[in-house]
Image (cartoon, rainbow, N blue to C red; front, side):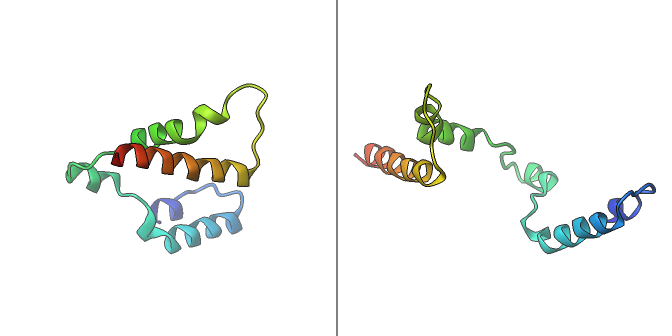
Length: 89
């Protein structure tokens, strides 16, 4: 918040206040990368990106395909269940 308050040239004070309010409200959800690194925890989304590729993207990015939000979510659920059942077997 100190950084935001010290910005000298603000074009829209209302938007700055909205940002301050949002960051204050969600402060516990914002990742502290310095603390993660100090704890030897991973930083990055590589695993999530790969999971998305395995579960959804490969199937949905084929030519001439269009997906609704519901259809995409349904396919993801089915794909995850299929992958999990193969891992458990």
